[in-house]
Amino acid sequence: SQELEQSPQSLIVQEGKNLTINCTSSKTLYGLYWYKQKYGEGLIFLMMLQKGGEEKSHEKITAKLDEKKQQSSLHITASQPSHAGIYLCGARRGGGGNKLTFGTGTQLKVEL
Amino acid sequence: DAGVIQSPRHEVTEMGQEVTLRCKPISGHNSLFWYRQTMMRGLELLIYFNNNVPIDDSGMPEDRFSAKMPNASFSTLKIQPSEPRDSAVYFCAVRGLTDTQYFGPGTRLTVL
Image (tube, rainbow over all chains, first blue to last red; front, side, top):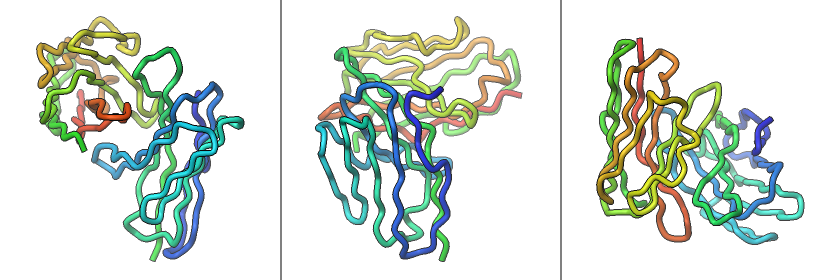
């Protein structure tokens, strides 16, 4: 089984609708990163969360970290076609290493 | 955005041939990561360097894979001999401030 499970695996929403993507870890989180990827391109860094209860926002995207549940959520308000892509969460583990383990990804399509 | 250049962007080769992928951070970085992304396995860390020294190569699939980082501004990932199952997108990433990793655009490798 994956260390990081994302749900849903894919999502189709109408433009203007809100949506939430979840990332659940089977191991302790020491840092949670959200990235966005468009087909054929690299990963674009969105946000990093480090402390339990932390919440960050950038434009219409908000991410939260629930350390106790070892879970993070990414919420998009009033989705736009530009939000379409694959969203990946990455987790940093303890031990002082710089390694990131990535989730399975959530593919988002925004319909006009 | 740390700025990472990868070359080539696309590579098509025949089974048994040697393949060399290149990564050039625009600014020197002391931590560099090589990832592989496939539909089946998602994004996997192959190897990472700190201060040009390989720290963890546990993700390198076989002896056919090797990586070098001769200086802070250049790294290579070599596959010799290549096999069809090596077909994937290979990403290079560098660590910036706050431990965030910044990804290059990737090299799409197809081994026939």
